[in-house]
Image 1 (tube, rainbow, N blue to C red):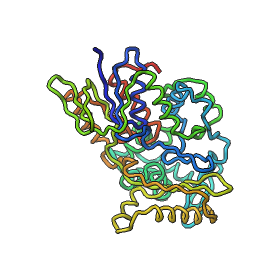
Image 2: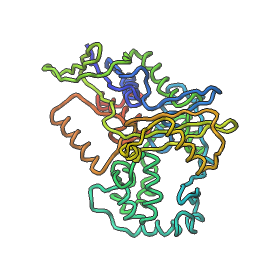
Image 3: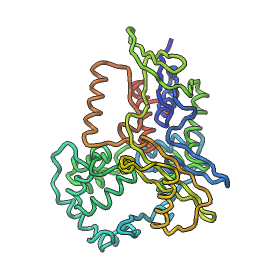
Image 4: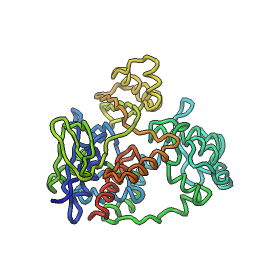
Length: 418
């Protein structure tokens, strides 16, 4: 009898792990276990009363780099090429980025000319921050916060305005608590390898081998900024589920894991709510930690949908103060933000409000040491257990899909056919 691999968690990481396991030349028996009644995790698309698609989780995926290319390859393998909706490089949404500072929106500088002259909210041309960065010595600490790293290399203004906003947008977190080594490993490695993040990013570009497909070539030629799917991003986990069932993968929904124990013969016993399973190897794609965030998605009668994401680590402060976290409060705050920052005074014709608990893991200072300790423990005890998901080495959809792929590689001992 062949090996049995149980994948715990039916989010995008668990789905990706199951997908790559099922495509091995001699695939093991794969059982995917999900505690809820739906697959896809935080990826969820809802169609409004007028047919508009509202994304309750991620609303777009970036095609850049090897991980972005691997996700596009997955899309092609699932037959979703015709459903892809890209944001091309010449689209205004790709060319314009703004920061809301001091009660006003400020366009971020682009191109050489923009870097050479003052661009509010920055008091000096960003050229000087770049010049400062090239002259700074390499850091000596094994890790530091994102704010400390940016302030040391690029100055306090870039750290407080640009990097703090980036941390809020990506992690819904505090740049003074998050780890540069774990949150932005390319910046950390660029400094370690080349003494400068600018030189490191420039000299290190293009060295990672990438897969190839017609969709990947199209994304490169058109300089896609990001992409989604015609029926919403949830089409991706739905297509993965269809593929898995066609490959003989058992998908168990509504089955919370109640216990995991290693038997004397070296096999796992996975205790579920209604039954139990035995497995030779377990891939755990269950989230290990996270933080709250909330968003209000609303649509005005004559405009595209708008999404306001609020909360993150600051939501915990609001809750600690005794504030009742009601949907009415969230909608009010979101509409106030849209009215103040974007001038959208008209009431929305349709509004969805969702509170997501523990949806974005926080890679705080020393996160890499926790990961290393976990790896050493699993290796030392020879446990047939592999960790996957957003809790470890990246929170973006591309990172989660790659985490699932790497988990499958670890179990198989070789690259799957893909």
